[in-house]
Length: 133
Image (tube, rainbow, N blue to C red):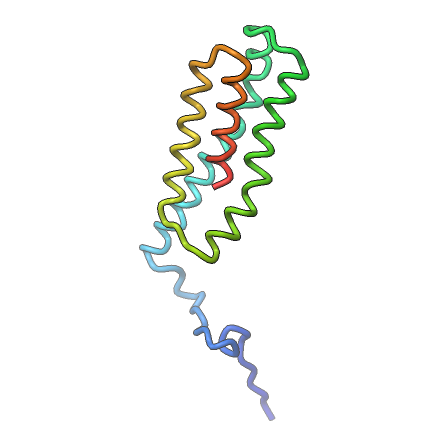
């Protein structure tokens, strides 16, 4: 006697995906594009801590000020992200990814021209907001 079992996907009403054929080319392209965007985002996030020694030396910042730049970036990048995720799960926003990239771009550009501690904080916040999206 053979007992047939259904996969959880079939039981939930969602058709099962044939994993032997693989993903269709458009789906694969989309997944690769999103993965590449995520890679770029993570690389840009690593940019800020990598220039801390230059910021400290060139602008005479204290360790406290460098720590506040880090705090500003982490608060905006890490604490806002779950709220953005919960909101967009209920209200999809397809343009959020490009908007996040624009925030990151604005932060990087501002970081390149900033001349004072306050501008560094604003640049870090913009990079963090872009990263959180």
